[in-house]
Length: 212
Length: 212
DNA sequence: TCTTCAAAACCGACTGTTCGGTCACTTCTT
DNA sequence: AAGAAGTGACCGAACAGTCGGTTTTGAAGA
Image (tube, rainbow over all chains, first blue to last red; front, top):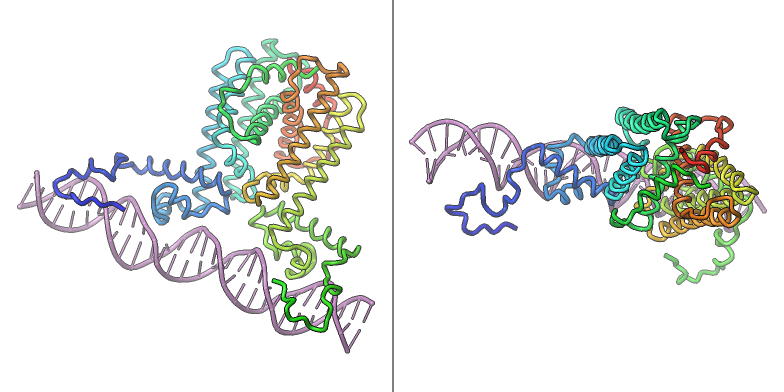
């Protein structure tokens, strides 16, 4: 594999093979996580062999176990990693906007982008039965938090008079999340497309004005 | 595979058990399917051992193989079974209503009931990666058909003037399906409840009037 | 700068276990 | 009695996780 014939006199730290600047432990862990996300997404939880994950990360199988307890542990780590990334990104999207239109539009963009990148994994993650009680609780808690964000957003908009006062907050939340998710699903279903094409204002319009 | 070369005195063609799907045979098959749905729902595809399925159906493991080719085959059969049940039920729900309100409301009721009964299995079925190309194509085709039903419904309502004429049919469909699904998800998330509690008219109202 | 060397990182062949699927045998049905 | 239906012990492929051996690293000493 590596035919480093001229091993003499070369400063090893800068030489060929070491293209990556001596990955720190944390960097490597992240590297494995990213590789594992790709493999889990492609093969599903049970179909993803540790061997594949190792190969995808460009390391040996044993090495994966230097960084993660077990396959379950790795998966749980990834789940936390992804869910947290989504939560933070979504929160930012909401906070960035001024009006409710802007807020929902930002959510729409962010969700579309995230789903585009992680759809398969999201699907797999939804199979919560396979996970330990612990991680399931954590996962559901974050889900709750996200729903709560939306509820807060809707409540705020109601108070500002941007939304009608008789609106059921829970249902409104379902409508927003559901519409955004479903839109992403139908797009992924056809096959991922560049996010630029999406007409987010139109989506927001349907949500706000309704169908009638 | 077939050792018909022996040409013994017995006429095999009349003694093959697969030839006649007797009533009891079909009943038993359905029985196994129902048991398998419960087991798949509880353990996920890979977690569901054939042994469990057999036990759940009250038969021996070998007997399952009298009725189904393989685990994959059984799963595919179930998927077809369930998806078809959903498609037909949804179509009926739509056709039963007169106005668009009624139609959407029927869809809402039906979807809620179905999800309540089959949620876990639906989740598992969404992990389409694990399936053969064949069955995945079939599954996606039916999904498309369902989306098409909704589109037709929306188009019809637009023509009748029940929905605004500038409405994007695709987006409207996303909004309806997404909202209904999300609502079910959030309910399942909390834990299944009797379907009676659901305020379907309120859901329809949010979809039609929008949030503003 | 070069050498040394112990610890850390890495590796993949191996092990033990877990099921999907089979088949020789038993039980039921006609 | 004959054959159909049913059974579960058994087989082997697949794979998570281990472990003994190898390579890399970097600090200390020359």
